[in-house]
Length: 82
Image (cartoon, rainbow, N blue to C red; front, side, top):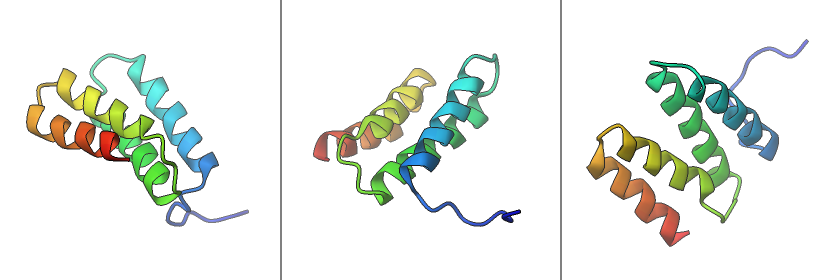
C-alpha cells in the first residue's frame, strides 16, 4: 500500500481534488474545505502545464463570491494570462 506523500500534480490528482471540492460545494459552511481543494486543483493544473486556467478562474470566482475581491482579482488575472 502506498503511503501519503506530496501530490504529484498529475491530471488525475487535479481531477480528484476537483471532485473533493465539488463534494464540499454541496455542503453548507464548508468554505475552508472548498478553498483548499480548489487551490489544490489550481496548483495541479499550473504545475502540470495545463494552459486552460479553468481552476484559477473558478478559484477567483469562489473568492469573489466570499468577498475577497483583491485576491479574486489576482487569480482571475492569472487565469487570463495563461
